[in-house]
Amino acid sequence: MNLLNKLKIVTGLTSDKTNNETDNTQYIISKDDTIDIIFAKNLIKNNGNFFYCDKKSDLITTTQALTNKLGIESIYCIEPIIKELLTKSSINYNDTHYLQCDGIISSCEFLIAQHGKIMLSSKQLGSNNIKNLPKEHIVIAYTSQIVKSLNEGMSGLNKRYIDNLPSTITTIKSQQIQDNDNTEGNIKNISVLLIEDYQSSKSK
Image (cartoon, rainbow, N blue to C red; front, side):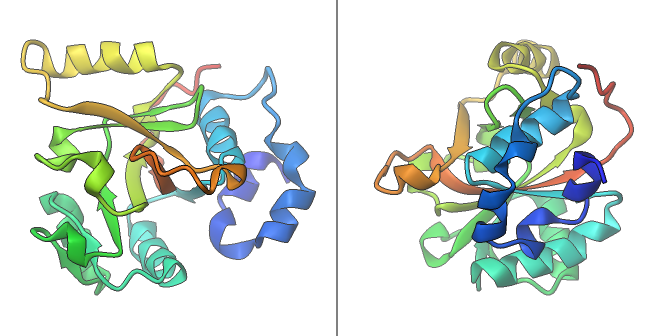
């Protein structure tokens, strides 16, 4: 079974830390890896969770299972489309008071393959400072949003918004196990739900 097929088995829900640690060699970057695989490997190496959804309907069951696993009783969300998903998933959400929430769920601008980071803007965060938002951050993204580098992501933002860039642009990364004492606001416990949208080129 190749790595992509393994990732499609929703690795974060079916494996424990002991099993992950004994099979870390599968996350070494290969010259033949496409950018979706590179992103997933780097995210998982940084202690993040990765979930591959073949279709949008998979999001409901995956989101339900993930919020249960993370112990999230109420999740912060300000994006209308994702609110609809949460309603269909029977998941309680709060769109005004993030301090009352155990986690946050959002879309993103881009996924940065090179570092396993997520690029966000005020389109997803509103006027909130990322440092004040909950540590548990669930990100919903499409395969076409994966770019190789931060520079490529910034270039994509300039093309997407032309002369009307969002007021806030930031990146977050997942917290490595050895960095448990790091309190930096941009370090989050990240879970990415990636949807195949058949628009990405899967370039190397």
